[in-house]
Length: 252
Image (tube, rainbow, N blue to C red):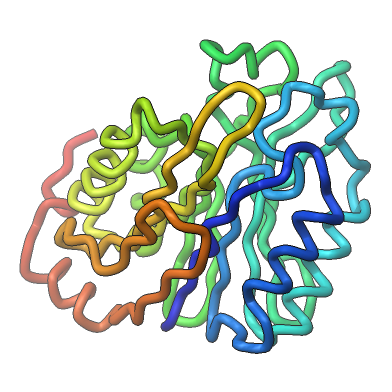
């Protein structure tokens, strides 16, 4: 399986501009099996949830579905969806190459330090879905600091973890280290796709990475806008899981 992450300098609350920018970066290259976009790729990490939110099946969801069909690959990206309690949901959506919704995941851990919890309701369920030889578990940004959620994903059979984010520069080493840790402890591939650039509040230095099941970084976007890709070998991963008993030896 070949996967690609797109590290984007997100224009603040400018949905069409960001979507057009993504299409320009990708061009006609496609992404082979899976393309991953950042958290809230259409707006940036805004607390103006009323401006960002769309109803289920709204314009951004339709654009993601169309992009997946156009590229002929699965596409994952972040979106904001209306909720029923006056807040919204920070979501990760994945569409298959035929434009069908494969997974809708709602961020379980809103970032309370940034008052995300006041504007976005917490999700309640770890999700996973199959794509080729992969069982993919999507997570969003602050979720990365809560390893118990990732353990639930690996228990359900996940062998590829995808974390989309708007993770700021001041804690960027935490981002990289925690992505490597999630790969090592779950014997899984991990892709972490962050944004780069600035928004009205924070600066972002990217460091989108793809990490193998040994914790080694096999692709690193650095700080520039653009694409990273890697080929994932699940036969090798399965051999490692068979030979190294960490998942079988867990007690909780």
